[in-house]
Length: 186
Image (cartoon, rainbow, N blue to C red):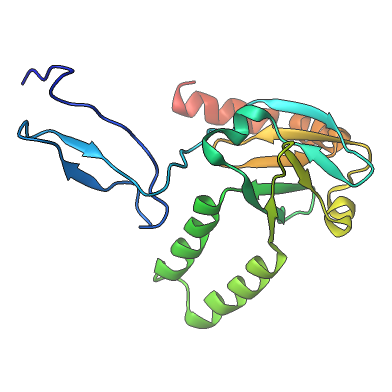
């Protein structure tokens, strides 16, 4: 079926309030649909690495392209091995809770224990108008951060590393990367 530009206009936004990505509404008599959302926050793909100095107040600047689409808050957590910190946008943080509560393999007791441990370690952070994220003293120590931080994109989240730890981890993980790259044809 041929649809001209005059018949359909599609605008894509991410609808966080409804907990699902789409709410479609009819458009005129054309039968086409348009996506309408109350929130205009779009998904950002976190990619690349950025080395930034930390200021005296322990703030690190988040790359501008990672703050597009109204992305001004994240949940910051230490990695399970405490080598780095990772930052999840609110929608990704919510997905963790959804997966936890909807997985029938996890018992109610295990669910409570995981939730208590995981969510108690998370810190809700607001990125200020200059694009800076404040890192707590505890998280500085956990990740070994002092004067510099390396921000590493990981698609739906980003990580904050001590540059020396990142270098060691990158060397240690190269074989796994090559194996998976071959498996998925990259």
